[in-house]
Amino acid sequence: MQGKSFIKLSAAVAATLTASTAFGQLFNVSIAVREVNSTAAIGESGGIGVAVTGNAIEWVNLDGLNFTADGTWQKFTFNFGIDPVTFFAGSNPPGGANNQLDGTRGTLEHIRIRNAGGTVDDVNLFIDDLENTPSGGSAVSIGGGFETQAVGAEVLVQEPRFSGSTAPFLTTQPNISRITADQAHTGVQSIETKFAFANPSATNWVRLTTNPGTGTTVTAPTIDFGPGSTLSFWLRGTTAIASQRWIGDGLGGLNWTEAGNWNEGNIPGFGVTEQANFLGDITAPRTVNADFPFVLNVIKFNSTNSYTIASSDPANNHLTLSSNSTFTPAAVEVVAGSHRIDAPVRLDLRALTLNVQDAAAVLTISSEINFNSTGLAVGTNTLNKSGPGRADVARVINPTAGINVARGTLRLAEGTTGASNVATLAIAGTAAVPTARLDVTNNGLVVNYGTTSPLADTVNRIKAGRATGDWSGNGITSSLATQLNGNGIGVAEASALNVTEFMGQTVDATAVLARYTRLGDANLTGGVDLDDFTALAAGFGIGTTWVRGDFNYDGLVNLDDFTILASNFGTSIPADAPRSAVPEPTAFAVLGLAAAGLMGRRRRA
Image 1 (cartoon, rainbow, N blue to C red):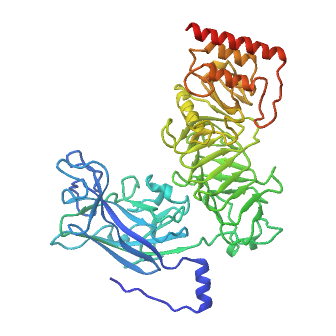
Image 2 (cartoon, rainbow, N blue to C red):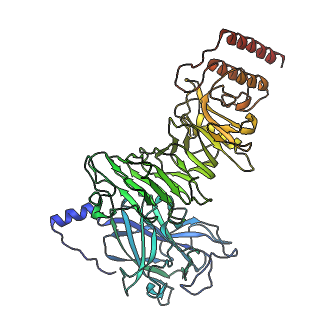
Image 3 (cartoon, rainbow, N blue to C red):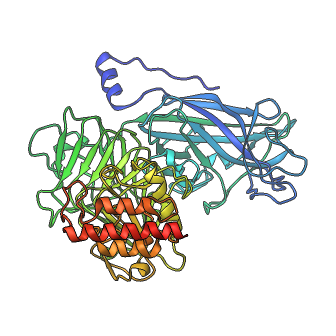
């Protein structure tokens, strides 16, 4: 193994280096192989296997080798038949089993890098001199030391976020894999890959996959993993705080366009590949004035002191978030701290991800997320909420796709006028047992579907969110609702209500409508009156839905539901306001007679 070089630094230089880079960050390195019995030559593309041999993927020496990203080249060797094997995924070949290598030939599936040291800084990794040595044979170079490929080409190793299984562990940028002439162990070229972990968890890892799909000359290279064979490669890495980042720490005049507010005067916001980093360079909460119509791919926050991005001229100066590629969607990412974007946010192309990795943090975007803006490409225009923290938005308007709450909470901010309007709604987990949360607060929601109604799933998610009546569960809930204040979430098909407009949104018959309202509001008007009692009376003893009087989501319409309606009769939203329309005495009399009639109906049943 090549020796490591060490440099003595003066105290001043060392302090500067410590402030700008996590020098000597620790990672674990291992590989995975796919048991496909490839018949190609070592180093040639091996495909994904055939049914006869299966497609199991096994880890070799899982997280068993340490790598220190200290700027030196380090060699890693995997000894087949000696190193431990751990099953990862796929199906075993006939007669095969987990935790062993079946056969002697297959493909290199990926190189695994685990975040053992818990860094959230940018990782810059170089890979060179990948070799497979069959038992009793000579070393065979895979990729030829990467000397003949064009600089900038994506070769062998996919961009880090290509792997769906590990993309959630990474921030959107950096996300690079390419041939470079900047570093090499031997020769003049190597593979360079750049990424950053989304949070400091040591369980996070990146899957540098070689799966087919890169469009490069070698994908999923064939290797010999018979007993006595080895696979080796060299790694060189460094970690560093993003060089382009906000450093303005004054009380006033913090304009985005002032070069002195950015490290090295590098102002971002002028292209779809750019990222604006707001990190721990401030000593107190600061407000940044977006004084230009900026365009960028990612905004990243990592500071226990809060940032607020505002605009002194919102009519002209806004933030346009645009996707760079399929694997670098437009994103706002929070590693630590709670932060706000009060400047108007506009969208361009594909999806928007709100990734709040700090479980205690709140990301607030005060403008609505409108995917229906001019020039927006129709397609996968989904608002994705990831990470365990909470993201607050005014509302979401997306007629072509929808909302995906993959983790944590997406909150429709209290006080928003009108309903969000989407085509689809996905919440992690099952509809009956969701593992993430959509908090509608005092708002409404339209799911404007195509052919298959999501009503049943929506009801199940609301039931999960309702929990025991305190609305503390996952699914669809309201942080303003409790059984005690008489408020909750009602839901109905638009066709059942015979409406074409709902909370400011135009709807047709194929739409599911939900809103925060008074318990007992069968027709989702926001209040409880005789029309709602009529709906309950018609469904009494036979109804099973909210619109027929099931206000506690137990699948029955009975005196419990009548009691709920009666306690809220004559009142309306806002939720925590006093009763806004006290019923006339005659109304109470009508309810009393109605109750007697319903009880009589129950006795005759």
